[in-house]
Image (cartoon, rainbow, N blue to C red; front, side, top):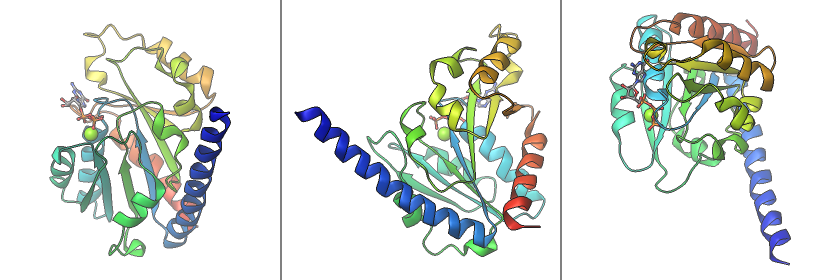
Length: 224
Ligand SMILES: Nc1nc2c(ncn2[C@@H]2O[C@H](COP(=O)(O)OP(=O)(O)OP(=O)(O)O)[C@@H](O)[C@H]2O)c(=O)[nH]1
Ligand SMILES: [Mg+2]
């Protein structure tokens, strides 16, 4: 008796989230701002890639901002703010994902029409964030060379709902004996044809390719 009731409540909460997310996506697209939701396990390099991304956009004079979650600290927000871009933090405490209304609340006071890019760094988790639409136009899954090539096969939900994958920390490829071909095949098995970026936030490799992809996507939603 209990199980169906729990499922019903969960379905309703997700449905409400989807409605908020859908409305936000309309607002974002109308404002011409590309919203990117970055999802991976803890420590993959979301903050590192995002900081490099923001710094390069700021240097090019492209208006961008970020919303970052943290369970208990403001470490990531502080690191990201060093890029020069405006950053807001959502403290999630025990929650394993972000929800659309949390993003909506944290955008108050920001003029969306003045932004070209808005990045959301999600909670480090390969499962929970997958079901929660945040109104993004691009969902980026990140997979580091230290995590194992089979992650996409073990956590297909994330890779199946993402628009692109960043393989991160490729400066550590040899030390980790990372099998690149195997990783690419794992991603391809779950989401054939998905755009893949091979990046290192440490050396800067691959970040410009990622920025070019974002610029293309932004032009599409802005109708330019
Ligand atoms: N060698 C190397 N280390 C990296 C790279 N990117 C990140 N790191 C290191 O990996 C660790 C985790 O990176 P973060 O950017 O904090 O990872 P995260 O995904 O934001 O982690 P959470 O927010 O806790 O989920 C840090 O010690 C980084 O310095 C990289 O490209 N190369
Ligand atoms: Mg982080």
